[in-house]
Image 1 (cartoon, rainbow, N blue to C red):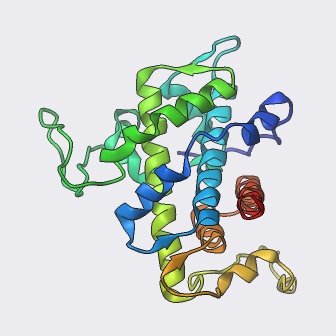
Image 2 (image 1 turned 45 degrees about the horizontal axis):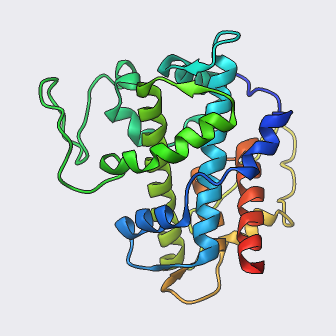
Length: 258
């Protein structure tokens, strides 16, 4: 899908409502993490992961709302595709795309949870637990987010948002567990742009994200900072990552203070 320039920052009542709605409970986050790793998940990690997922889904819904025809408040899968085309930052949870009819024209084939091609007459769910099979767990939270944006969605759109949320949080859990196992973000890196013939700019030694490339603590517990580090791996720069990190930090700090 061709990437187009990202839209301006959101403003207005929608922004305030993001922090007021807690759609994905820590108990759901822990259930997803248990599907991925036996490691203990701290309270701050659960709240940080819930916050990041909320921020990402809210941004996707807001993008779809803006892409919808004027005055239309029921979103469709076409609005989702338009939102992703307009803002490449929203292209998250991409493993869901192989399982959704919304994206079938882009991927060409439909796969099951184990990666096998599914014939059109055999589309039953896999017996193996996965982010795809468990996507329905996110429906209540997705509907809360839709209401917070003043919209509803057709069932196919709700299904896609459920699937994207489930796959995104599952990938976030896997990356957070890897951060713990490896003692930091071993794949951490930065990309700088420079014109030919011009010297490269100096490294951003004071970049706060670089502090997430190493970790402290035991190797059995996923902490809030581990989720923040995983977020930098799932969201590749831009305003969405900055907003997700800022809101996740606030959520984790409020939990620690409570």
